Length: 112
Image (cartoon, rainbow, N blue to C red; front, side, top):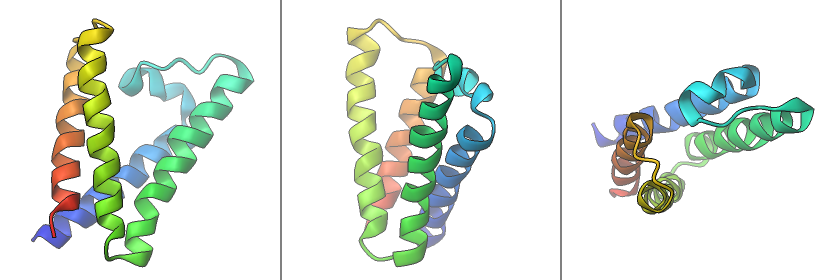
């Protein structure tokens, strides 16, 4: 069951990247980032798209400890997001949802 959850987390990471890659103008709704001009769109496509696709694909291709690498990445994002929520006064529902997803994915992915 845990292996299935790890695969689901990797696939959802790829899906998030795919959405950013193919529909960068949709990202304000789930990230708060606004793709302004060609440069902004390129950043969303490459960083949120390309990086998330690669981060999700590698564990599916290589298996093993690469799932844990993705999990530690999610946990690192969660720690910084939690600090940012308070430091930047960004306590909005979408930020809390993202934090919860990152913690759940992180824990699932680092479990042996």
